[in-house]
Amino acid sequence: MTDLGQVRINPRANVYFDGKCVSHGIELADGTKKSVGVILPSTLTFKTGVPEVMELVEGECRVRLGGREEWVAYAGGQSFEVPGDSSFDIEVTKTLHYVCHFG
Image (cartoon, rainbow, N blue to C red):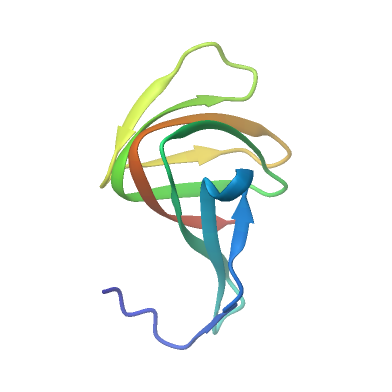
């Protein structure tokens, strides 16, 4: 369990890609926004509006940032950054639990 202090949580889940990705939006007392979720094994493409840091809590995946050819492997305990107004492909090989930090 992670102590998030004073936080607002949207109790309605965001469900994407026919349920392959499910997350909940949270907002900290200082206005910082994040999402906490899970991605089931699949290959998906996400678009970003603002820069994101994907903090991987558990699981395994490969990521290809928009405009790049190479895939990079990640696992729980690691993170990767995605520029704003961009995209990334993610291939999840072991159910992925994550925290996405926006901005």
